[in-house]
Length: 150
Length: 33
Image (cartoon, rainbow over all chains, first blue to last red; front, side):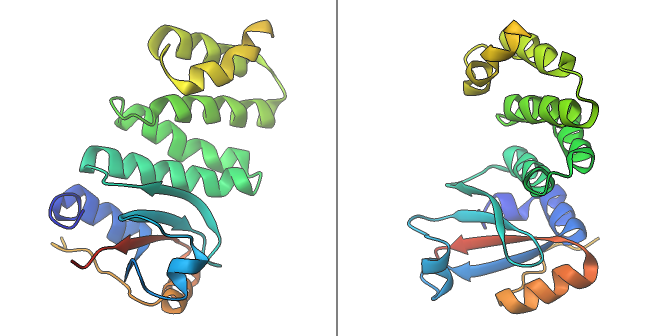
């Protein structure tokens, strides 16, 4: 990560402007035990109280790292049931990083947020149709299959 | 424009900074080699 991703200017700007970046050795105690670290890099998104909401294990290139951060931001809001607040980072991930591996998951969660804010099931079925046509190999397409019945 | 990430190295300090700036924390467990 240090040799590639953390040298990328977009990554530097995004982290410095929107996050508090915290780096500790993988064997730093008690954190390594508290966060169940078994491999490096382990990347964890925390809220200001130190509660985990999202993680990734293994190298992320720059083009996947910012989508990871956006999804993490959305998951903080999802975990708090702040569905309207989760939508902007999901929309940004889908719009600005269309080639990211995380787009199918973002499409799924965007539909959940839209449903939870409107109680209209249409977005869930639209997500199913979108995932079926564009990401049929995605695990998130499989998860959306019940919405085909709506 | 900053040319490097401004890493914090202490969780409690990061939590204080996150509260003050209304930000999330990216915690990177890395292998120093």
